[in-house]
Each structure stands twice: as structure tokens, then as C-alpha cells.
Amino acid sequence: MIGQLTGLVSHIEGDHCLIDVNGVGYVVSASSHTLGLLPRPPELARVLVETIVREDAIQLFGFAEADEQAWFRLLTTVQGVGNRVALAILSASRPSLLWQAVHAEDKTAFTQAAGVGPKLATRLLTELKGKVAKMPAPASMSGQNLTAVSGAASKGSTHSTEGLEQDALMALEGLGFRRAESWPIVNRIIGENAGEGLDVIIRLALKELAR
Image (tube, rainbow, N blue to C red; front, side, top):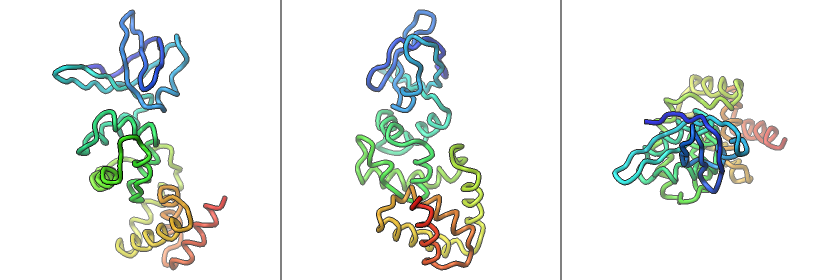
């Protein structure tokens, strides 16, 4: 089982690259994000590798970052999401955006990937919600937002907080803001302004989104 490769990047083409390790060339499929982070050939690179063994082939999938590899594994647990579709999703959206999209129940981060329609996007949101709740928040999210997420979850009634959050997100979506974009802001504002009504939450969120 190959878990990591360190070698010379021979070439990058389409959705894969060729890495030369001591004279042996490994074809590694990867997202556009990972391929974009690789050095120009023929420079040395290190990639984390997920090895998929099948009866007729051995496939290598490479990742520049551990959180992307974790999301690849997570996405492929969903029925109908194969390795290629998982890479397409990771090419279209970074793990931090996917994390936010699942919490905000926003399909957009998934449907913009090739091979993902509304039906599959709905299944992804449904099946990933419980699994993502057990994962740490992406490192790219600010500490302030993370504090707000945990704070909002612990204050007041879960039902009323979630209802307020969903109403605010729907209102902002009607004004043209994406749910994945609005969710971390709304979630933090609710946590910082316990007891405030919907109009106040929307007004404060609009003030930040307008920036």
C-alpha cells in the first residue's frame, strides 16, 4: 500500500501527474488544487497518496494536503460518489467550503462539480451531515468563527437557534448571497447576539457581507 510519494514531477497533464521515484514513474490522479500546488517539472515534490486496489487496476490518488485526503475518503463513503466524482468535487471546492456547505445545507458547493446533479447533492448533504459533525473544522476557518460555532450550539434551545439561523440564511439567499458564504457569518452573529430577533441578525449579517 502506497501512502506517500516523494520524487521528481515529470509532467502534469489534465487530472493527473507523473512522479518519478528513483526511476519508477507513478501516475497519480489529483484535484486541480493539488496539481496547481505541485512545483514545475522536473522539481522534487511530496504528495500524500490514497491507493485504490481493484481486480483490474491499481490507482493512485494524490493530495497536497491532509484535509483534502480526509475529505476524499469521506466523499467516497457516499453512495454514487466514486473516486473521479470525489476529485471533481475537490477540484470545484476546497474542504473549508465543503464543511461550511454541509452545515448550511447548501448544494451549490457540490452541484458545481462535474458529475454531481441536484439529487446526488441532496444525498451528499444528508449522508455527510452526521459524519462532518464528528470532524474538526478546517484549519482555514478563523478562530473567531470556530468559537462562535461552538458557542451558538451551546446557547438556548437548539430548535430556536437552528430556526433563526435557517430563516436568516433563507432571507440572505433571497438577496443573492450564497448559503455557504452567509452561514459562518450568521452562525457567529447569532452566538454573539443571544436573544436578538431575525431583523437584527439579518441587518448585522448584511453589514459584514456588504464588505
